[in-house]
Length: 135
Image (cartoon, rainbow, N blue to C red; front, side, top):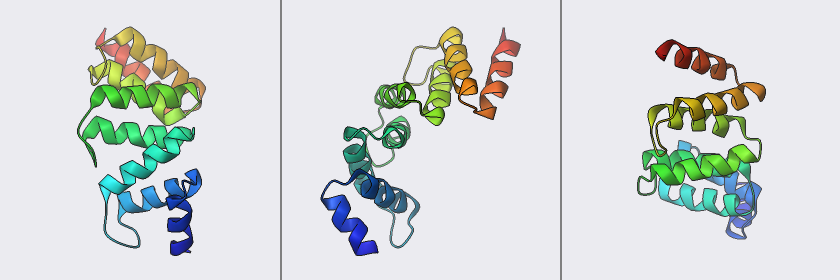
């Protein structure tokens, strides 16, 4: 199976790219290879995979397998969130709340947290309460 996934990923299959990238990030079935994982996330993201955009955004935000680029991470999160990715929506709220890769804006943070809550993310409610307490 491993050879099949690698062959499909080499051919640009988005599902295979995601499977292999997540495996490389976790070090399952072999050594971790963050740089290769980022390349595979990028291939899947370019094919329109929302989860790949989310994963790529996390890598950019923290500089895992690529140079740290918080604004690039926010851009990936925005694209994934517009595709309905709940995790990316929550992360956008965090980025705007903390000014990480985006201007610090409690209003935009609350907007994204409300969207995440509407998508069923329980942590979004906690984030909204935290924001309300800061005011």
